[in-house]
Amino acid sequence: AKFTPTPALKYADELHATAKALVADGKGLLAADESTGSIKKRLESVGKENNDDNRREWRDLMFTAEGPLEKYLGGVITFEDTLMKHDAQLESQYKGSPLRDVIKKRGIIPGIKTDKGTKPLSRTQPEETTTEGLDGLLARSQEYYAAGARFAKFRTTYIVTATTPSQLAIEDNANVQARYASISQEAGLVPIVEPEVLCNGDFTIERSAEAHIAAYSHLFRTLALHKVDFAGMILKASMVVPGDKSGKVATPEEVAQATLHVLSKTVPPLVPGVVFLSGGLSEADSIAYLDAMNKLKKKEPSIAPWKLSFSFGRALQGEAMKVWAHSGDIKKAQETFMLRAKWCYEAALGEYKGEAGEPSK
Ligand code: 5MM
Image (cartoon, rainbow, N blue to C red; front, side, top):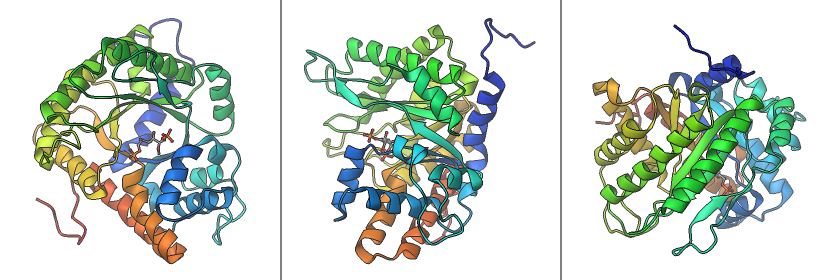
């Protein structure tokens, strides 16, 4: 029997359908929502100036790439500029169309980052963060829905040390995420809840798992208190890895086991999908870890009742951006991007065949 709490959520059916579609059949998300400050770092790292034309050319290039992008991507997360303003300019069948229409015409769902970035949590030592963006969020979300967006993304971050994430950071960020998620659902946008446990530091994979469990268990309790509809949201999770200054490297199987251990303890089965960020991990590692998780899930389906897919920024864009910046060859950059999207799709099915197309173990 179906129990529908009252008052009912206006967009419930649509939210459920959108959430499922975002992660259907090996599909994942492209995180192309770098704020102006973050895209500056990415562009400058390949020797490109951060200006309107370069940002547009880069994003045009990805969204208009030839090939079955809609088979690999359920959605694209955009920054406000891209959703609301930019026009596709490259020579292609999409010339002159707003980028959001290019995404939609390809059968990919446009989404939008609605957070306004992380800010220090006053008087925390070591310094932890909260995330801004709740003020006026309902009106902004309604405007994005009217412009064609069907999901939103909001990122909070946690640092791992011997004493963090602190109870303050855990509770504050859970509350922020829960308000964001309930407001998004009220406006018809599927919330992609992104609580990123950063991988910077000198800590073991076990300590990372502990930090994830502390943050995610409180997060889901708070989402429930705020009446968030779990079937109409997606979790964007970090992978559980040893800290980048620990001198330790875990195997894909170890990362897969640790990550699924954390998720199976904290994420309700009603959530249709967990998508992972790449978080500065190499493209090869991000793909190998996701593939290992899906291979493990095939052996033991009950440990992962949700789809396990990707929402990569750097792991999908990094190599292609280098090709574009260094050779100026748009076609070659598009092929490089499309190949990464295909690998991610294969990993989301646990069928990654390796760079050379050889089946991986
Ligand atoms: C694409 O970057 C997103 C926006 O970051 P800023 O708000 O700092 O500009 C970011 O939230 C991203 O979606 C996640 O970090 C995943 O990207 P990576 O590169 O870690 O896969």
